[in-house]
Image 1 (cartoon, helix red, strand yellow):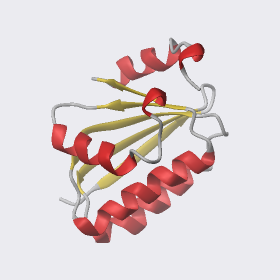
Image 2: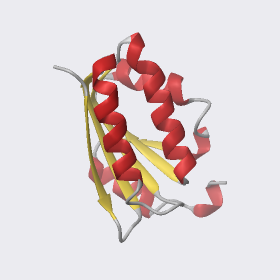
Image 3: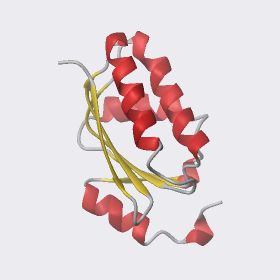
Length: 131
C-alpha cells in the first residue's frame, strides 16, 4: 500500500487536521502535494495543525524531500502551533521530526495520543509559552 494523506478543516477554530498513512513512495507525492495545497487554501494564517502519524511509515528516499517541502508549505501559509499524534510507530515520527526540524520550532509543537487529546492540547495552550 502506498502512502496517503487525508485532511479536514475546522474553519471555526482555524484548524487543519492531517492524517498521513502508509509508506510514501515518489509516485505518491504529486497527489499528496495537491491535497495539501487544497487543504491549506481552506485555512487562514495563524492556523493550528493536528498531524496524525499513527499509521505513517518512514517513506522512501524519493519521497522524503516532499515531506520537507510539505512542511515548508504549511509553515509558509502561517502555521501557528501543531500537535502530532504519535501512535505506536516511533520510526515514522522520528523521520518526520528529523525532516522538519529546520521548519518548525520545537516550542510550537506538542505530542498527543489521539485527536481528542490533540484538540485539548490546542484548546488549552497557554499563548505565553509560544512565540
